[in-house]
Length: 165
Image (cartoon, rainbow, N blue to C red; front, side):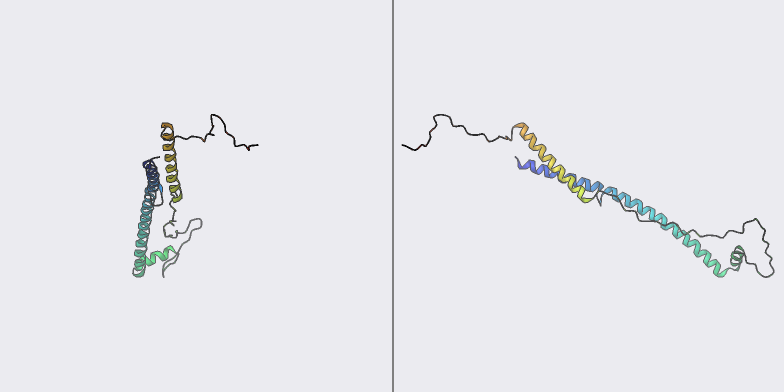
């Protein structure tokens, strides 16, 4: 068999391995796109939390120095200042306490990809498959002849080595 055929089948096996690993492997295109999507989601979440932080910082600054803001929060909590009267009506809800949105928890999601072993097995499988196909084509064309061992038959007069009397 020709060495070129072995090299071609090695090339095909290697090409299949590289192609599968490039598209669906650990560092492949599919993994890259999923990581980019996660990056965008994390960026959006970070911006949301930054906006919440800015709002809370403004409220904190207002509570430190502005007496009107302090009295408004105190009224929401049910406090009154001197000279004010508080009327509570049964059946009506008291003013709602403001709960601050702290954002949502963003969990790490593992990227699903083909394992390296699968990529290698696929490449090796294609190598073996193409090598067998090339051998079968050579056998079919007659380039390789598979012959069975035939028993040799001696024709003519048999000669025996007999003891002489």
